[in-house]
Image (cartoon, rainbow, N blue to C red):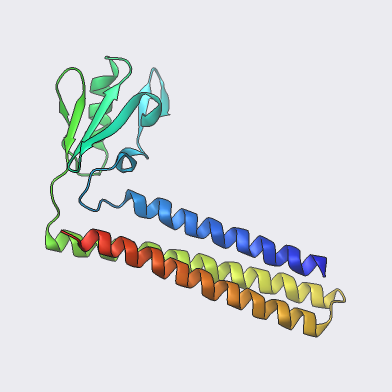
Length: 186
């Protein structure tokens, strides 16, 4: 049935979004190397309106341990510096009048373990989202059965949803294991 395929496609799209969201959240986790994504979520006060940092400055990584932020307007230097200090990212920005330089310290073993716990929490959240999508899809399929779809079609569709769920849970595990390996690499 077309309606069943619609629900299966919708579930797949939603699960894809869960994986994308997980990867976005894991990119924020600092793995000991500098990356522009570390400051991606910051917004600065740009003449009275909160604006993403990427829209008022360029963020580059000249080496593995340094982030360089070069504002497009000099008056923004102090605003950006204050925003970075006020954020709870744990960075200590250094302003030289032209650019802001952030040195990323290497991670201790304890901090690495904490980050792995943080990634595991994000991974569990992604698994919960995938399972919740499975539950919602199965509920929609059961409604179709009440509306006249055959029981066999619904059972087959539920089996496909379960297979889809299993594949996305394994994708979550794969993404997590890569991130954990990245974090634990000294």
